[in-house]
Every structure is written in C-alpha cells, then in structure tokens.
Image (cartoon, rainbow, N blue to C red; front, side, top):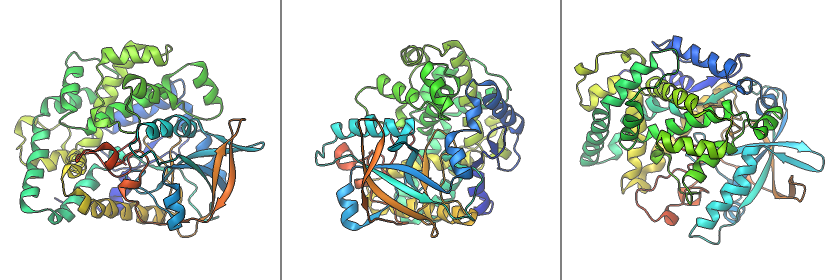
Length: 474
C-alpha cells in the first residue's frame, strides 16, 4: 500500500480547536467534507453546551497559562518513588502522562469534575475490586511551567483517527510474529470486516445524509457488528458521551458549564450504573446497550435528555464516525458488491478499520507480553516526535475536550515539580510533600497501570497498555 508521509498521518490524527467556531479537521479533503462541516456547526452552534467546544477552562489555561497544575492518580506510588521516575502508559493519550486539570483556589487546588470523579469514585472502585490489596490510591499534583516558545494553539489527538497509523506500524513490524501468527491475524481481521459488510454499508448510506435519522435495521446491525468490530463499542460510547455532555440541561451541567467544564459524570454514571461492578475492568469493546436499555439509563442519569432525539442523533453520529474514521476517504461510496474480501484488498477500502482491529487483535496473542512494547513504543516515539516538532508539551484528548490532558514525556524543555497530595475537608486538593521524580519517555509496564492489571484480571486475553476505564484505545 502507498501511505502518505508519516508526519502527515500524525497531523491527520489531530484536531485543531483554535477556530472560534469549534473543532476543525486538519486532514486532507474527503468525500464527507460537507457532512463534516455540518456536524461541526451543529455540535458547536445548536447543542446547548456547544460553546464549550471552543471556549472552556482547559483551553483558556493552554492558551494563556504559563504555569498549570494537573492531577495524576497512581496506585504504584511506592514503586515510582523507589525508581525515582514517573513514566507514561502506552494506553493513555498515545504515551503521555494522563492527567486532569486543577485550578488554584484559596488554600488549595480545585479539581476539574473529571479529576474529582477519577480520584473519588473510579480509582476507589478499582482498588476495591483489585486482587492486589496492597495498592493504595495516591494523588499527585504536577506543577507544569510551559516555556515561552511552547505551542499555544489547541491541537488534540483523536484516537479514533489512529487506524491508518496502526496498520502502517503493523506492516512495518509484522515479522516480529511467526508465519502462522501472521496468517491467523490477517484471516481473522479480514473475516471480521467481511462479516460486517451490511452494517458498514448502512452506516455509509446514513452518513451521506446531512440530518439525524432513524433506521429500523440500525440498532440490530450495530449490536451484531460490535463483537466482530470491537472498536465500534468505543465509537458508540464516544458518541453517547459527546451527546450527553453537549445536550444535557441539568442544573449540575449548567453549573459546570459556567465553570467552563463539560459534565463528565453523565457518561460515567451511564457506564457504571448500567454495568454495575465493572469499575477497573470494563472493556468498551463490549459496550452495546440496546436503545431500549439506553433510554432507561438516560432517564436515570439525566431526565432532561429527550430519548427520541438521542436515538436519532446517535444513529446519525455513529454512522458518520464509523464511515469517516474507518474507511479510506478515496473509497467512500464505492460499490461494496465489487469488494474482494482478502486482506490486501480490504486494506485498500477499510485500511483504518483494519488498523484498529489489528491493534486489538495483537493483544489476544499469548506471546503479546513478549513483544507488545515494540508496537506501543514504536507508536509512542512517533507521537513524541510529532509533538516535539510542533512544540506541544501538553497534548489533550481531541475527540472532545472533556478535560483529559497529558504531559509529553519527551519534551526536554518542560519545567515541572511533583507533590504528593490529599483531599481536605474543603473538597480541595492540598499538596503535602514534594517528591523528587523525573518524567521519563519510557512506557510503564502494563502490570503497574491503574485501570488494567493483567494479574488481577486473571485472563490471558485481557487488554493491556494502561487503558483508562472509559477512553481506552489511545
């Protein structure tokens, strides 16, 4: 296959939020350009909370702040102190140190609502379920000083756009696998796509329409396709999370909007109230609630959401995202009956989708612990190189700016200090002890990550890579 320049591929995987009207795709022109512009305008201008897409507290800090305070949560503090280094995970914002914003307040630091949920709910639930009782949740405060020449634009990484990079990297490294493994992997992913052709064709047809739509067959085909195309579970969850944050009119959401924050508790509650007992081990590849169940969950979580509007919106949005992120642009609207369903020909039409499938399929190989780091580090090095070229020290999740921000561990001119912290009676975070730690551009071993512990899960096919509970494929 012929690929564009690697720098261009990484540029395509990012979204610019510097425009006053919201996110702007920086990738090359494609047949869905009109639909893309329509969606950007609709979400930014018509959604009740759409103004946050371009004007929020995190962006204000990135635009103008010289010193930022970030929260990082760990359950391996003793190991970190013992080694004197703090390292990123390959599953978090493509190899950056995963954090959430903090805001200086009188006497302490106020947590962004995402940071508050992770520290006070998610990490505790994960620790309770863990089979490693010696793990203690420790909040770390990082004070980051950005150099004067640091990039002040708003360029975020969108993990749903990484499919082509996954595919390219695999083809460059596939001989780390044996002949039988390569054959089995190619056959597996090709069959997954071939057997999902009905869903992909319907998604492409609905995506071409500029308005939300409902289709009788869509919920069934989506539910059937997710087990074969696990990344669709992530698309479903991202579309739902985006919708809840943008369209909620609850009092809590309005209060957070005034603070410049999306309400992250909404989709977290859908996940954990809809799938109780999953904290710390939930796999979004299994996220496929029926629309009937989803309606019940939405009524529990936020009665201001209108189920009829939500169903129509999610149908259209999922179809758009699946088509725009998983098909090669030049192959959109081709006649699928002419597709030859072997790996090489599928890659010509569905290259990004194949990349996502391979990225996950590799994690099911029993030899994965022996070679996973070659794939993850290969990708992380590319991301670090792109960020350093752009002078980006603090990359963020550009799928939607909900408050997930990372630290580029390869940015050599970043000044930082690290404190151990605790929550006070005033609900603020208070630094208690400065810790001498070095941020290192080496990926942490998956057995030390917060949300995914292979030993705790006790399964050979457990996804690894330090995936965050609700935002995993980064």
